[in-house]
Image (cartoon, one colour):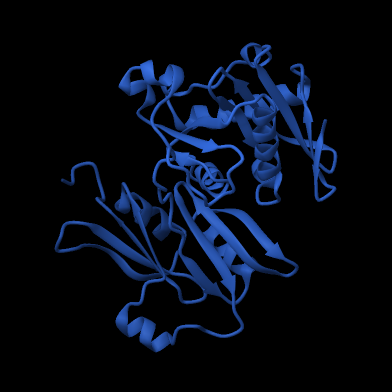
Length: 303
């Protein structure tokens, strides 16, 4: 039986490898291939997905296939497999609807524990799982027998089914903080997104409202939330005199990024310098005056 959410999202069983399923799984594999070496990718092949103990689903938004995911049923637990939602529709409830359907499939099979393995660079996915009530756990099943290097980038989660998000049972691990995201106050969300995209190389994760009043930009592991305000929240003179930072971003190579920004005319509050403690830092000023610190080791020769 298909589940609907907000009349726009449809999650339906996918019993065979249709062209839509193949396209989504191939997109997911391309994303993971760019992030992790082969030995650290544990996703099932298409043939392995469509086995008797796996239930697989397709998520549609306004009739278009935009996500997929499955759940493998084992004697003592169920495991999320090949869950993926296209970037263009993230933030619209598709992932939540898909995950809820997987939980239902596991519960319908009489299982009370749902587990999953993801990569340590999948920050958005881990945030989704944490909000849905999953907690970090040790390696399980076949993962527990793998070589340490094979699961070096793996993060494992589990959830007691039937327990509302935020509640803990005696067997659930302690909650783990996954990420902190600074909030920047801006006068125009669209203009701010354009600056971070065109000048700083970020992509726009989402915007809300018409006209937008909230949004998020992301580059690699750095995420900045943007909040529209009608007047400055921080006095500009105080901000400049005290060097009041709106966000601090760490990276592996501050020198290269500084040169990248310098070449395209990014406005700096502070150019590249070596701090007394050895870090290389520079500060960018965005169109709203927000000061963004970038800090890193600078180059491969730095200790």
